[in-house]
Length: 68
Image: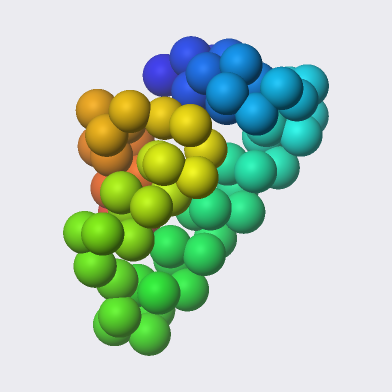
């Protein structure tokens, strides 16, 4: 699924795969920080999707990344 997400980020942000991976990792790190502060909200995950040009269908990916 990560490969598909990277491709979608590349298309939405007009960037290469390395940049897309950095953007994705940055969003996940931001969400982890919010989780660790006990301040993570559903809207934060929605914002991460929107910011990367992803459909909300990909929220499950972020939730899974936060669980690991």
